[in-house]
Amino acid sequence: MTAVVQRVKSVNMKITDGDNISYVNIGQGLLILLGVQVGDTEKEMKRLAERCRGMRIFCDENDKMNLSVNDIGGEVVIVSNFTLCADTSHGKRPSFINAAKPDVSLPLYNKFVEEFSKHTPVKTGVFGADMEIDLVNDGPVTIILTEEPSNNI
Image (cartoon, rainbow, N blue to C red; front, side):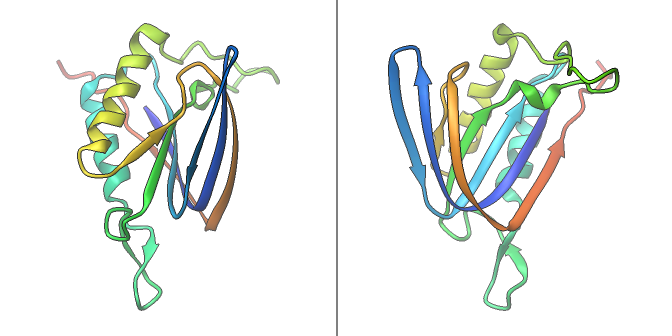
């Protein structure tokens, strides 16, 4: 499972799902793009949600990155993004064979949002919809986090 975590000053997202159009807007906080891969489980999801939520990437009164999104009362947008699972090792066209199918990725995405929401208000995109995201990246601070599936049963 992969998360791209961006510290943002704002996010404005237009969601087009068939004939339905909706909008999501937040101020200071995080934009998290989440990619679910084949083999990912609830164990990786919980660990990754905890790591994203607790990440201290906001500045304190001494201008040191010491505060989490919860510490600053920030907002969060989480968007499912299967393209994070792209395999680009062969040629110029990415393969998405490593991306989990919707019957696996949608429940894990929803559980990630639910887990994150236990401590922080979250807004989301719409799974499988077309989304146009305008953001003001603060810093810029962009961090990639991964949780690999454990082969231990």
